[in-house]
Amino acid sequence: MTKRTRIPGKEISKPVYINTRLVNYYWQRTSRNKLAVFGLVFILFLILLALIGPSFTADPTLVDFDEKNMPPVGFTNIKSAYHIDTNEFTTTEIRGTGKHPLGTDGKGRDMLSMLVSGAMVSLQVGLIATGIALIIGTILGVLSAYAGGWVDNILMRFTDIMMTFPFFLLLVLIVFIFGPSLAFIVLAIGLTGWTGTARLVRSEALSLRTREFVTAAKALGATDKRVIFHHLIPNVMSLIIVIATMSIPGVILAEAALSFIGLGDPTVPSWGIILEAGQHSLDTAWWIAVEPGIMLFLTVLAFNFLGDGLRDAFDPRSSV
Amino acid sequence: MANHDLLEIRNLKKYYSVTAGLLSKKAGDVKAVDGVSFTIKEREILGMVGESGCGKSTLGRTILRLEEPTAGEILYKGQDIIRLDKHELRELRKEIQIILQDPDASLDPKMTVGDSICEPLVIHNIGDEKARAQKVAELIQQVGLDVNCASYHPHEFSGGQKQRIGIARALAINPRLIIADEPVSALDVSIQAQILNLMVDVQEEFGLAYLFIAHDLSVIRHMAHRVVVMYLGKIVEQASKQELFQNPLHPYTEALLSAAPSFKSKGKQRIVLQGDVPSPLNPPPGCHFHPRCHRAMPICCQEEPELVEISAGHFVACHL
Image (cartoon, rainbow over all chains, first blue to last red):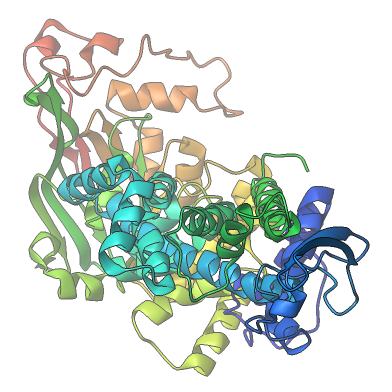
């Protein structure tokens, strides 16, 4: 053991996130997986983009019909027009300009600005919905495992019932009833998406519950609440982090899919909404659909890579 | 040594019912602890030996009410533990503590060592943060570790060190009685001696009583003042250490003693027990030990021997 000069007992309570040694250890294990590092870099880039991007880009809602369907820089597009006064049909070739580096959509809105503000929407949806699902899933899972007996039975049968609901149809139903508001969509995804988490957390907590440190805590007089919040939940935390990174892309995709079939919130420019608008003009302006598609693809990929890397890093049996 | 009885156990029973079949029909009882009575005086080390599965650990856990006893009385300072409500039980936990067998599993892997040792103080709301930190630092030094250890996690320590931490945690709230459930059986022989000596030291320093559970007679010989020998949930012999080791009366004790390696036993005949401990679900009739006893008589398989006092303080349950 290396000696460190430190005031004894001064920092006896130290959660993982400021425990630099442990964080370093996990970072070392994660960083050995190059794809996970790519994922992390991309996600950080995305967060930065969503947070400070909008102050550098143009207003994504600015409509300018003179500049509609402008291609991205380096691409050209044939624009046809019918002139009623001369009864002529003209075609002109337009080039992408620096003003709209990623082109414009059918209403002349700047694609770059729309994608940047869409990043915020997708991240919000992913994080909030996953957060709701994780909190519900963790609490139910730990409670179920710790209480056992009939409590466990009821909670797990309830989980089974929730699992048998076709999740997507339920979403469609909720949107149909309450209208396509982003808040409802996020809430609906969160309130239906916890079942897998509950199961995984329960099985982990079941094995923890019989470990001797739980016995020791009980022998010390710890209340059930203390055992659950100070011993069980911290020990399932690494599992939860992995579940979170793995389920965020699913949620982002679900929102995009809802938007794509026309059930998204039309007032919020999410990537799914842009994609949906672009699919109608794929033959005239392909970039409107392709650009948000690429963003979705990369985001989902990045979260999945990071999730894989974290899972391996947290698993002491894997030799990364 | 005070002659005060600290803990008195009267006819304690712990049965586990075994169910079988579709309708969970009761198939029988596993009599893990079957009518055990003994006392522990203040500042006394009572050793308890027996093979695996004879009910030693269950007994220890039952005294702490980690398992609910089926019948019997557990009197601590004259107060029946079994009748205590939740609040009183918490108070009791300040008086009786446990040291568990597996030092690896008995510490929460996500907690720093300082937090683990501090936990009993937090649970019982003793002292403010500063006083607790002070106490933790004191305890860590008392069990022979470096003060800086407080900020490390358990996985950074060896088995022996972890057991020292476990001892420090048990000592934190100044208990009167410690139930040591095979505290050294998971350790190296060289480390065992250190831990045992530490336990003797703190016993004198804190004025503790121990119920020292072990399956290793040499450990018991080193530690105990009095010894209880258990077989299949029952006490078969109980005597002071000197008396038991010099004048064992029960054939089972004889066999155990002859199995312990020693320099003096040259030429002495070893008594090798045949077979395994019978199932406690279906114990043999009469004396439970008779199928394996080298001195069994016809009466042994019919009548169960009572635990009788042969000489002062020496009890034995045998027809011999």
